[in-house]
Length: 421
Image (cartoon, rainbow, N blue to C red; front, side, top):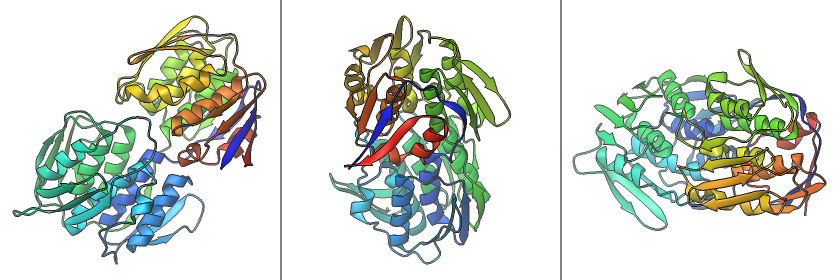
C-alpha cells in the first residue's frame, strides 16, 4: 500500500491544467459498446477507474488502443460476451453502466454488483425501475443483476425517477439509445457529465434531447456509427485545486475549465473571501487573508456538489467563525473524513445531516486515513494547509479520480511525495 507524505504550510502558486472529467469518462466508455465502428475519445483522464474500465471492455472483446496521451480508440464491432469479468466489475462503482449498454445492444446482460467508494448506501433501485419500464425482466441477487428482454421485447418507455439520480439517468439513457420508440426520463439529473454523455451519443448518431434539464427524451435508433469525441474538463478536480489554493492562501490559475460549470463552487469560495477571476476557459483563485465562515448545502446540479463537500469542509475548518455544512445527498458522508480532520485539530460537530464547523487558527500534521475518493482529496488539502508533516494512507482511493496528482501539486510548490510501504 502507498501513502502520501505532505509537508504543509506552503501556499500553492502557479497554474494547473485540469484533466478530462472522471464521471463523464466512466459513462462514455461503456456507452461505446453501442457503437458499430471505431470511437476515438480524447481528453480521457489517466486514472485507475478508467484503466479498470478499459480492462473490462477489452476482456469483453473490445479492441482498445491508446495511441497518445489522453486518447483512447475503441472498436466494439466484435463483442459477443454479455457477462463482464466479476472481479474487475467489483473494483469500481461506474461498472453498473455496463448493464444499460449490454442490455441495449444484446437484449441481455449479467453483471456483478459494483464496488467503488463505500461512503454511503447507494442502491440501484432506480436503475432497475428504468430497465423494467423499458421491458426488461430483472433478476437481482446480493451478488449480481441479470437482465433480459421480457416477453414483449424491449422498447422505449416513460420513467419517472423517485429522485434525480445521476447513475440511473445515465444508465437509462444508454439502455434506451438502441431501443425502438421513444423513452422519456422525468426528474432526470442535470449534471454536466450527463450532458456530455448525451453529446457523445448524439455525435455517434443517437437522438437524445433535453439533457441538462429534468426531462430527457431518447428516440431510439437502429445503430450508432463511429466518430471522434472530446470529454469535458473535470468539475470536481478543478474545485479540489481551487479549495486547495483557498486553504493554503495561494494564487492559482486553473486552466481547461468551463467556468459556467464551476459557479456553484466559485460562488461559495468568493463568500469565504477568496478572489475569483473568470476567463474564457480558466479561473484564477487567489487567497486574500483568512477565510470567512459560510453556509453550504449540497444539492444536485446546479447546486453545490456533494463531491465537493469534504474539500469545502477543510476550508471551513480554518475559517473565522462558525460554518454550517448540510449534506442532502449522502448524509453518512461526513464519517469518511471528519474524525480524521479532528485529529489534525479541526472542530467539527455533526448533528444529523449537518456539520457545525468552528474555525481554528491552523491545523496540525498527523497520520490520517482516506476512506473514499473525495475524503482522501480533503485530507490532502488539510495536509497542505497544516503545520508540520501529514501522512495520508489508503491513497489508492485518491488515485481513482485524480490524474497525476503528485506531479501537478509539486509543480504548484507543494511538498508532497508518494511513499510505498
